Image (cartoon, rainbow, N blue to C red):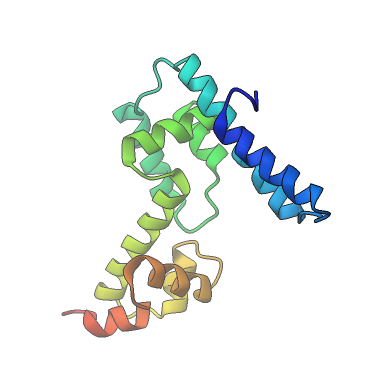
Length: 166
């Protein structure tokens, strides 16, 4: 396979060159290289044998998944639970969910939590810690970090811009 694919040949060749120079690669480097080679092999297999019929989720399945997320917003929502709600295998569900929503299931759940947090910050006087707990974040710190990453400001600053009742 290495001789037939330039990308894999380069990846494995760089590892070989490093080892020939006497450098022992870090475990993380080797694991990452193996993952890259695996992805490349998967891409090559898809090009040779295109997958048929992997489209979007049906409206009904997406509705059930959204309802489940709404009902379980304050708890840990697993990919396997979402796939079970859609009555699909995990890998097929994840692929179809992303094709339907544009987001991976975990990213979608986080985005929903942050969107709801914006609503609670604007419409209630609940503490930031209470909001974090109600929306299933592991801690106020996790909530604040996630909110800042997605919205560009902390929940406190957001609330200052949009005070409750404004």
